[in-house]
Length: 463
Image (tube, rainbow, N blue to C red):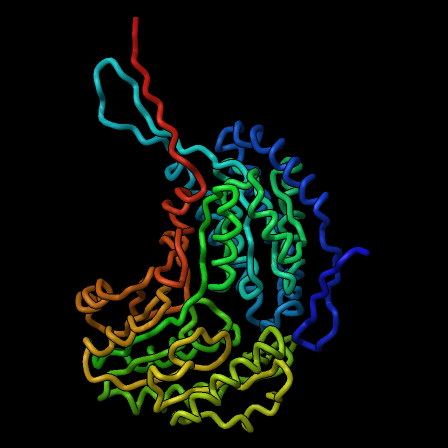
């Protein structure tokens, strides 16, 4: 009997997508097909590969309206926000296509008489991409497109919550003329995903997900010596200094905490505020949070949709209850959000004060609309608390003193430091994490380094 995946829509609880899971034999055929197709794809001139992939981006963007609606149904993002994912996809894709000739150009050492030397960046071969549901295209494109640009073949395994995203990728690539086998997707069980990653035909795995999932990737890839890039989430902090533009900090950080119902690896989950600005900052966040509208994400007036499933909402509620039991105070009255209901994915946003680092709400990843706010007495205290985490993806500083912010940023144990913004990936900058936030990097020119290997050419010129 064929196993199936069933995507339960958080919008209304119905089965939105149902697909058969691939068998072991189908996985083996896909790997053989990729392995056969990849050399010819890699042999094409870079400009030709980029031209084909540019047409694929055009085809994808042309379906923006349909794709946005599918995002809303699959994972619950408000329909007014969902098109932003397509715009972000295009921004990253166009950037990587444009920077590829420079990023993939041979490295030429200084001249040495009688020799011609260079280091070429050559493809790894077969790359497996394992993508999550929360930003289903933005996370996947970070690896899928540069891997293909560099001449690799790609097999995408997408979340069971967002399987249509994998199918949309294939539709766009096929319509643009990407050869059969160069890009494939597989709907797989957890066990078969591990089997795929451990296969010796796989050269590299790009994974976005949980810390536990990252450990599973490392264990699986050990069998075949595949490399792996791991983006494992965060507990991202922000620090509002005394000299910050407070109105801007309130607006930016509230959005950073609650956009996408707080389901962002680099969303703001803990905020430290200089004591003289603390009361005013908290009051501003509470006022703005109470303006959110929670409800059916297909309604264009809704600004906060459901989280992905009821169990995810229950996990956030449990963290909030634990914090309150330890002395924290909730500042948002759930009655102000009548759509919020226990046992459903519809969850009111929450702002917590009187929190400390003994509470899970300030320590463990919170994948939902809840944020803790603490008062601090100095820059040193803020940096100490921001670094007091097993995660290190991003950190944000709000200040009018850029020089001081850079000095503080140098002390932060994160992959990205923001000043006066948060929760954003600039495709020109490397996306990376430290500690339990992962290893490796995507985006920017250096993102291609993880998807290629150096190959040295040492020619002695003779007459």
